[in-house]
Every structure is written in C-alpha cells, then in structure tokens.
Image (cartoon, rainbow over all chains, first blue to last red; front, side, top):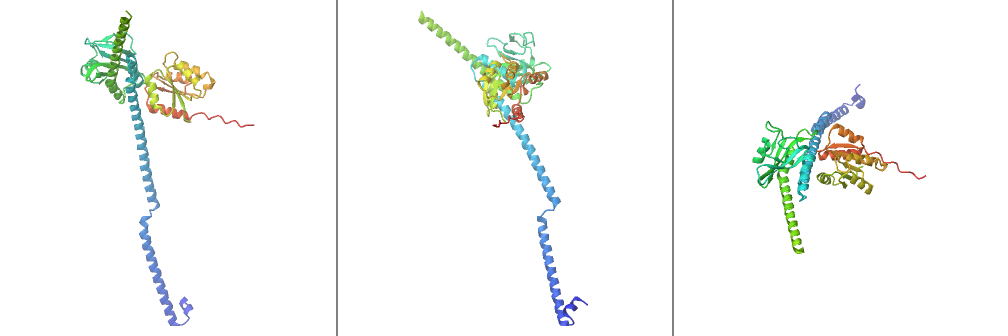
Length: 253
Length: 133
C-alpha cells in the first residue's frame, strides 16, 4: 500500500488532492534549487579557489620581494653617493680653509694619500721665469727615485705628463710612454699652471676607482687656485711686514 | 647601545673634518696625536669610542693604544684603527695591540658607519645593577 493510500484511505478525491499538493511542493523545491544554483554560479567567480588564492599571494610576495631588493640596492647606492659627495665637500672645504701655503700643500697631500690612496706622487708648478716646473711637493719618493721627478725641478721627460702640461687634459696611465698612473692638470682660471702626477698607489688599493675621477677633477679645479691664493697672500703679507719694519726704522731714526 | 662620545685621533685636518661631517650624530672630541689623545681621555671620562690613526707625530697610534689599554678604566672603550697601513700584518698588529676593528684608508663612509654599528651591537652586556642587602 502506498503512502497516499495510507493517508487518504480509499477516498480518490483526497488522493488527487494530495498528489496535486505533492506536485506543487516538488515544483517549488525545483524552483528553489534552480535559484540556489544560479546564485552560487553568480558568486563563484568572486570567491577564488584556494589554489588561485595561493598563486595570487605568491605573485604578490614575489613582487614585494623584488621591490624590497630594489629599494635596498637604491639605499646602498645613495649611501655610496652621499659618501662621495661628503669626500668632495670636505676636500674643497679644507683646500680653501687656509691662506697658508704649507697648509694648502699639506691638504693636497692628505687628499692624495687619505682619499685617493696615493703612495708616491709629485706636485709640479710651472715657473714664471722658465719652461720647467718646480717640484713643489714630493711624497713617497727618495731623491734618487723615479727620474724625471728626482731633482728640484721637472724639465719634461714623461710624455703623458708633458702632454697634460701642454693641453690641460687629465690623463690616466700607465701608458707605453709613461709609468705614471694619472697626470692631473692644475688650472687657475684657464691657464695650466702645473700638474699633480700620481706615480704609485698604496698596496691595498691596486687601481683608481671610478669615483676617484671626481676627486681628480676637484684637485684639478681647486688645488692650484687655493695654492696660488695662499702664495699671493703670503707674498703680500711679507711685503707688508717689510714696509712696516722700514716705517718703524725710519721713525726710530 | 650606540656610542655617545667619540674621540677622533688623527694628525690630518682633512680627516678630522671628514669625521666631523660624517659623525654629526655623535659628540666628537679631537686630538692630533697620541699624547694629546691621552690628555683628552683624562679630561673626558665618558669617551666610549676612539677612531685612531697610526702614523702620527709625538706618539703613534699603537703607542697610544698600549698606554690607554694599560689603564683598566679604559678596558671597555672601543677602538677602531683607521690607517693607510693596509697590509694583513698591519691589521693583525693593530688588533693584537687592543683595537676592536681595523679599517684601511682610503675608506668608504659606509664602512665606518657599519663598523660602529657592529661594535655597538656586539657591546658586552652592562653589569647587573647591585641589589641592596
């Protein structure tokens, strides 16, 4: 016996009614199921599946990782740049901080040794009354060392240095014609008044680095003008003292 | 702990100016040779880091180091040698003499700051405060 028979007994009208109610209920259930399926399909693309979510997070992580690396490398570069600028600022400041010729020479030597790592170098200044250059500063060289820079003056002989003294261009060596590592022209305004010649670097600094070029350019532009200003001041100061002494003597007499 | 007061011992005015610009965040005291540095140490009892050159007139950096390390009061003072003497044996000699680090000139600014930070990070623990009986 079916369940309808059990519920309606043997009354056909009630059976028909129940069947009709059952059909309606089933149809409503189907409608609800379709509606639910539609709603699920609509929301499904918005909620990523776990694998997709993991891929997306991995991608984001890798992007963040590369951003961090790039920022770190930029930070290192900017620290390096700031160090270079600091060296240039301090070198310029110190070159012009005094009007004493020995102190300016000492600063040139300190820049060459402490900032460039030079072990042997000479500072050549062109004499006003001749074609040769005075060796104003000699560092790390004995009197008999490294001809043609061994005497009191330099009269030519190193082709790279001679070319720099002639045309005012900074040259890096060594070359076939010269064992010098660098010939740095010294300018006062547009005139070439001498050169700094680097002959040997400290053992632990085998080569000039790219950033050293900035310091060489700075020496080229500032060393001679600082030294000439100091020498001019010293000469004027000497003259002034001589005149003052003469005036005193004249008054005393 | 970062150092507070730093003694710069170098006969080069250029280098003293360099440290002045580089280490603006610290209180700096200067000396031009080892003898002057000993005077500065006596005058300022609270120096916790020394940047020391080797080749100086009157008293070299290594002579100064031996003299200062012989005083137990300076046992905790950190010393960084900064010198143009850059061979391995120079470094070994400096560290044996009592320096905590050795940097050869020419240096990069970051090197100095890195070593100062490293020394600050590896600073021995401060003694425990005394508990009253």
